Image (cartoon, rainbow, N blue to C red):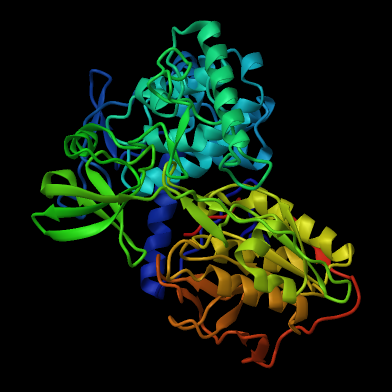
Length: 588
């Protein structure tokens, strides 16, 4: 076309596609306007005035005109104005990303955070602290904000106050609060009216002004309380045997040390009764308990404006509201009673419950298959810790055997805790580590892999692993539970038994999700990792295969395939691990 028109490389070529008559008219107009443009401002657009200004020249009046109606003369753009604009421009995302990396933030986290509107909050908090003091805390704060703030925004919560978040970071730098508490504190700061001083106090940390001595006394007090608990045989509650933090001092001890007698316990009829009678209750609910002379672990009959109830008063989570009294009913379910609906409350007994996982030595049989269980923070076998609102997971082989003894008849189980995160915090960084460890375990000769995972994002991880762990020779089974083991309707044991049996004996060598099939306790379904999705927040049979049927059904040690096209188990150890994830993806 350029050769036919005799156009050079610097010439513009305009192609018009229209009926011949319209095209000829259009070519003529384009030719005229191009010529005028080469001479200066087109005369059709503006006209010159004798005083040197120009004005709008309306040739096509009315709404059909294609130019805006303005008489504003053109303004010259000086180099100085351009420079001022350049200096006022915000930092480019890739420049901000590089700066975050230099602060020690992981590459993938830096890339995600740099593109978010709350990156300014991260900058305000970190810039108030000397960079050499932040150290690894910068990376932890970036990860926490990248994962928790989007959850807050989806729930309509505002960004945390910069000063409050800065006070939390400062408390961590001073050693007054553990870095591991950052996610929970960030969640609490997103609540309306949250104040850093109140939160630090609620989490058992003395506010600023106590000095190093007070902080040291607090740490010594926590160690003393922990030692007393261990001496009583109670241990510390936490994720597994080696991840329990120091016991928390009673908040009555405002100087950082516990109040007198707060760390003590007394025997009552063979029961160990904690010194804190109202664990987690405050405000109007605390006044209600005191008025009727009852406490946590009291068996009570409650009369309310909405009916009568009987049950056991449970501790509240440290971050719960102060409006509700929580009862565990005889059915095993919990209910919350608003304090201002209670008209009478009578104690009928006392029964303190210690939510610990029983532990027994896992029997090893050399003739059984070896299965590796990776933990990511899910709670496949657990008890609920009502003081913290968290679940205490059974994870070591002995704990799992104590909770689900049927596992010993299936395989020789070995466990490894990779993470201790909520499932909503599982992301690309964790996917990469998990895929690599699955590949290593296959190479070490395990007959199957089980991955314990929280259910909210299990289908995300299953899809990612399906692409990262390609052609595995053994089953890779993801499993979780919708309801903790202390509930009568828990699905934990059946899910774990079926998943472990599939990993040890099943013929299908793919990445799968093993969860309840029907709502009854009949069988489990195996879903292909790239096809499964969680459909409901509490149904036990919430996982569904989308656009297809499940791979198989597992019922009482029998696996019945539903599909024909599945990858069979192999004897070799060959697996392709592609532990890579690029987050530069968008949806238009």
